Amino acid sequence: MSATAKPDLMSVEEAKHLRHEDVADLMANYISPGQLRLLKLLGFDRVIIDHAEGMYYVDQCGRKILDFFGGYGSLAFGHNHPRILTARRTFSDEKRHEIALAFMSQYAAALSYNLAQIAPGDLDITFLCVSGSEANEAALKLAERAATGRKPTVLYANNAFHGKTRGALSVSDSELYRGDFQLLQNTRRVPFGDVAALDRVLSRDRSIGVFILETIQGGAGIVLPPDGYLRAVRELCDRYGVVWIADEVQCGYGRTGRFFAFEHEEVVPDIVTLAKSLGGGKAAVGAYIARRPVFVKAYGTSKTALVHGPATFAGMGEACATAIEALHTLYDEELIDNAAAQGAYLQERLGALKHKHPGLIADIRGRGLMVGLEMTNISKSMPRGFRTLVSMLDERLRGGLAAIVGSLLLHEYDVLVAFTEYDRNVIRLEPPLIVQREHVDQLADSLDDLLSRDFTRIAMDYVRKVKLASGQRQLIGGAA
Image (cartoon, rainbow, N blue to C red):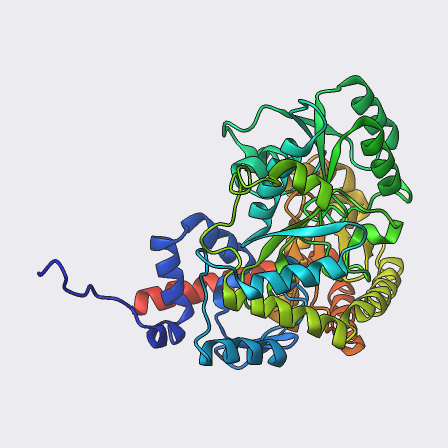
């Protein structure tokens, strides 16, 4: 074979028509066998999406699946919003430039200007990148350089999640994700939402120069800070000369009924990070927005400007154009107001279900369209005579009921929900901001119907579906 001969490559059209068993084989061999096993456990491996529009995925069989997962907050506009598609098509048709590292980019400049108009206070210098982890990495470096004096220690909250790259992982509170990796040593943890603990740590450890904080914790199971906590954070960071990074990668971009979640307490951090829906659901765009004095202190000279300058694919033309159109759409369609209204209705419906099914639903919490539905430990859903015995297994079985409910919602009711990294009992609901009352009703009515069965029947229905799917896979494999 010639060194330049074309290998046996699969085409886009061939990929579109792959069956789910073919995709599973490719995933096991070329992506991640462990990830495939998790999908099989939930039965999610039996679904291959053909296309998506608005609030719905449509699988290869034509089945519409209501999306209350929302890509962990990445799909504020739903799937393939027509305005965003048009903006991207125009950019492509006119062959506008993508990578402009040697020149100024009018699209990156316009997007940065727009973000400065939206952000409160003097948050007006933007750094563009392609993901939330990258935004947090860049923010951590900026904050360390801008901290008053030589104060290298970075403070983070318990149950925090800021990403899986090395720096972001160093301030993420997860034994699973951290594993035995050699992470940054200049970090320290503080309880989330505890003003007294924060004051105590900052007053005693004057090496702390940076505090990174999710404004609402997503991976922990949608945990809101107590009222007044963010105002106290701002006050304490000012008192002790600490740079405050607000991680709004998941809770920002209008999801809570304000563009930034910290705006509910009328405070301004020194740096805020964004990603997820910033790219309109069609482009990978992340960013930090910094207060001008903070940025200038760190990178304000020509000598320091490129210490953490733009990466190759940061601020790409079409991605920035997509983000610009997405911001206009967010305001023109009043989606932030819709998030507040539909979020309140969602919590109202779920609160009624908690009252009706107290043995299965432990808690409902959230703000806007960032809502956590916490299921009970399995022992509490068992008949009374079995609870004490089963309670000894609660930790090992934690998340079992949430996983079963999520699986059955998909397979019996055509509703997709998300799960939570740290508290496995929590079902995460982050639907697109275009959601309407009828979509909330579909989710709530489906949950009500499912939870109206007793736990034993719910579990048996799940096991029966898993066995049926396993038999179908074996039959397909044998036939092949």
